[in-house]
Length: 225
Image 1 (cartoon, rainbow, N blue to C red):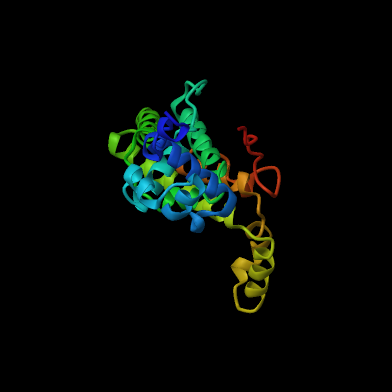
Image 2: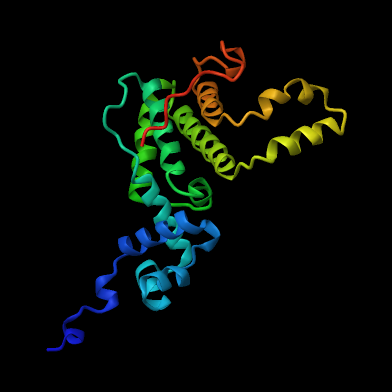
């Protein structure tokens, strides 16, 4: 047989995992808007229909990508205290989003009831159920933590150095005395401190950033890979 005859077909060589991995590389290189099934197919050197055979639609591709992001969350060495465990899980969730360009925008734009996403949600709800009074409270707190983390991280990944100047100019141009008094804090791009303060406010028991010893809020744990 010739080499061409013995080589497997592109459909055989590919798998959903291979397609998703390539799509994530494209995401990191060019951003979320560049991710299309055609672009992924071009990078893999196959027809678009071959990619669609594995992932069905672009929507499903994005869902699988979002689940793969959640698949990087680790569960070893979590704190015993349920409140601290919930905090640490939320930190690890944020790190998984930050590990990819537009990671938060990707996840926020999908609905992915897939294994990695469900494992994270299940582990976090279990911690919250021990930390809170009722299962219903745990479910609502899960939403609050996830939505807060997605929103903050999406802003963090889109932040521009010009944003501070635009906000300062806008506040200075109108009658916004409360904003003017808080402008130094509002224009700070210390997202680690914002994140820790927000999680503490949701879970309770934390020190608000504005009352901490530093005007820039409490120091946050380093973003470990």
